Length: 632
Image (cartoon, rainbow, N blue to C red; front, side):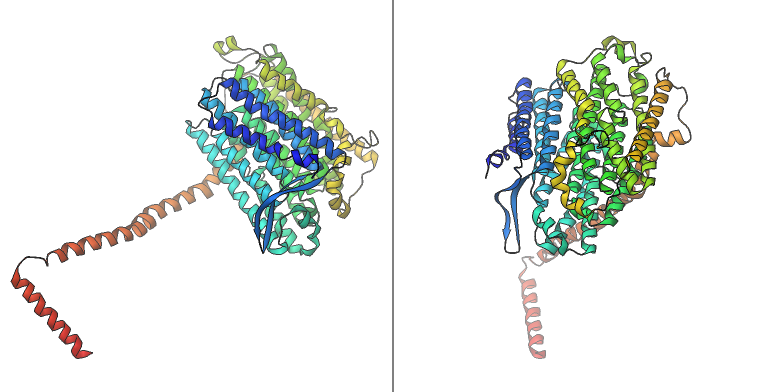
C-alpha cells in the first residue's frame, strides 16, 4: 500500500472526528473553538485531497481494502476506498468549497447559542464526511452508505431551526422524497448481486458483458431513479426548493459541494453501464432537459432570492444530466465543478444580502444594495456572469461543452437547451438588478442597518469569485487551444471504457464556433433585457395573472402532488389508524382482555361459599363424566 492509501482514509475520518468532538462537546465548547474545530478538520482534509490529486496526476490510482464489510460464501463486500481521477476531482470540490462554507458559517451563525453553534458545525462535518465516503467508496454498497448519510444530514440541517413547523415539514419532505429514490438505487444493487455476485466497481465493469441488455437497462434505470431523488430531477425535484428552510450556508453546501452532485457522480462512475444502455441514456437526457426547462420557467417569477437560486440549481442539474445522457461525461463533471464555484458564490452572496437585510429574502423589498455592499455586489455580479455562460467565465466553457455534445446527438436537444440558457441569463440578472440596482425599497430601519458583511463572509466570496472567473480555463475547447482541455485529458482513464464504445458525432470547427456564438448572443440579449427592465424596478400594485401566476406558483406541481399523493395517503393512513388499527387490531386485542375479564367475573360467582351449591356442582360434574364415559 503506497503513501496515498496510508493517508486517504484520513480524508473522511477528519470530518467524522469533527462531528464527534463538536457534537459530544457542544455544551462545553465556545463558539470560537467549535468554529476552529469544524473548519480546521475540513481544511486539513482539503490539504490531504490536494496531495491525493497530485499523486493521482502522477499515475497513482488503486483501490485500498481495509476490512471485510460483508463476508459470506455467496457474497464478499469489502470496506474499500477507491482513488482515481474522478474521485480526486470530487475530493477537491467537496473539501475546498466545503471549507469556504464552514469559514463563512462562523460569521453567519454568530447569533446562535454556543451549544447550537457547535451542533450546527457537527452536522456540517457529518455532511462532508458522508459525501466524502460516497465519492471514495470502491463499491456500490460503500457509495450507498455515504448516499444515505447525506440524506440524513440534509434532514438534520434543513430542519436545524426545528421550532419552526414549516422548516420541519421541509426537512421531512426532503427525507421522504429521497427515500423514494433510494429504493430504486437499492433494488439496482440487489440486481447486481443477483446477476454478478459482486458490487465492486472494477468487477462489475469488467464483467458487464455477462449482463443482458434487459439487465443493464433495468439496473441503469433503477440507478437513475436514485439519482432523480438525490439530484432533484423530475418527478422528485420539489424537495430542493423547500430545502431553503435551512441556514443559507447549508443551502450552499447542499447545492454546490455535496448532496445534489451525488447523482451526477454515481452515473459518471457507472459510465460504462450507461453507455451500454442507450434506452436509459435517452431517458436521462430527456428527463434532464425537461427538468432544466421546467425549473428555469419557475425561476423567472420567483421573488424569494434563495428560491430563485434553488430553482436555478435544479435547472443546472438538468444540464448535467443532459450531458450524461448524450455521453458527454467529462462535460457533466466539468459543469459540476464550475457550478460548485459559482453556485456556492451566489448562495453565500445571497446570505450576505439576507444578513444585511436583517433576514429579509423578498427581492421586491431590496434594491440599491450596490452602494452599501461593494464586495458582495461585485462578487455576486461575477457569479451571475458565470452562470449565464458569458465568456470567459467558468460557466461558459462547461455549459457550451454540454450543449455542443447535445447538438451532435440531436439538434433539438441543443435548441431546447439554448432556450433554457436564455432563461438562466434572464432570471439571474432579474435577481441581480432587483437586489443591487435602482433605489432601496425596504424599510427605513433596514436601510439604517445596511452594511457589508464581516471578513469571514467576504473572503470566501472573493475566493469563490476568482474561481468562478478562471475555473473554466482548465476546459478550454480544442478549437481555441490545442490540448487546452486539461480536464478531459485528466479524466480520460475513467471514461475510456465507455468512450471506446460510444459512437461520437464530431462537429466541424465552424459548427462549434456557430453554436457558441448563438448561445452567447442569445444569453447576452436576455441578460441586457433583464438588466434594462429591472434596474429601476418598482413594486407592482397588482398580483401576477395568467401564466405569470402559474409560474409564480411553480406550475402548481406541489399542489398536484398534494392532491393525488399526499391527501389520498393521509386518508388511507387515517382509515387504517381509526378503523383497521383502533377498531380492528386494537379492538381484537382489547376484546380478548375484555372477554377474560368478563369470564373471570362470571366464574367468580361459582365461589359462593354455600355447601349446597358445591354438592350440586359435584353431582352435575359426576353426571357429565358418566355421560361422556357412556358415549365413549
